[in-house]
Length: 379
Image 1 (cartoon, rainbow, N blue to C red):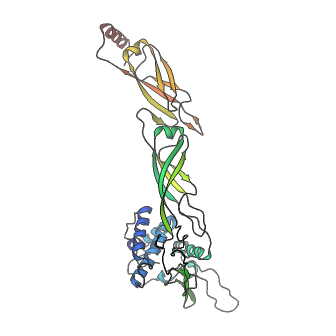
Image 2: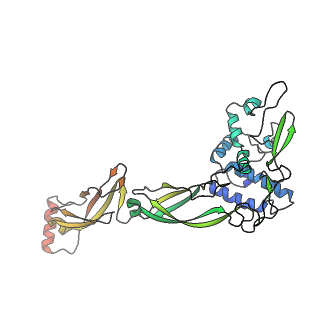
Image 3: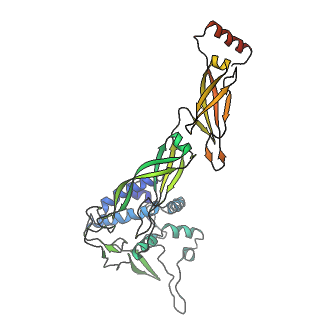
């Protein structure tokens, strides 16, 4: 367990977003990477520290539990007393064999400290070894999900169709094939940990595994880093994606584009892209649930005498509506089946009449207006 707050290590606030934490970590990792600062022990220690902090804060569940433990005062700075978990690699322990016919088993915080349910929080929060073990053992892992936002026209949201999105993703470096080593070379097995990523140290009854200080848990050492990806094994590439927008999508809805996210590890599948869709407002149409609303201006004389108007729909069809004589301002007409299509059915288009009163009326027209006003047929 860290002696220093993980947020302080990265230099971010506890309210920092995932993107901010990721951006800060990348900058720090480039600055303190051991392949860039060869022989600098302080940089090595700093790199190890920020990597541990990022491994916890990048995972939503681990970060949540870490924040819970902070509330219990588990991460005080420079506290004396108590147990220092910093030297332990959680998830690597086995119970000691005290002789006789007893056999080892999984180590449990409940067994040692009587923490009850809190032991799960400690165990899950610092289970960093699992990911490293998978990488070293050759097990594949799915890539991370990426997040993006797009804004689409109103009609596209109603009718559905295609929308293009440019997005930057990290993919395996073609030059080093994702190894991080210069082209024509390969990472070498760490001579200290023999590829395990950890070294075993006896502490009393326990055989404690610590992260290998030479390879920082990677199990391998890159003697000459790739000049293209600078040893990261990945490069940023901009891709143009064609996105299928379903009919009737709502504002702020999310779409998942499978297999287009970050590259996986050891041949693992790519992650997904999660897209938040924003819908632009329309100057003529408005949406309420499954229905489409619009307002059509009508000259007062035509309203008094009755007329026919042609109304545009969201499907780009034009529909004629016959207005009766003396139609009132605000009168609404319903066009069945011209609304939003959804699983629950198709809505309607509601057309509201807005009567326009002109000042340049003839004497005869003024009489018509006065008569209909007095009869209460117009507002």
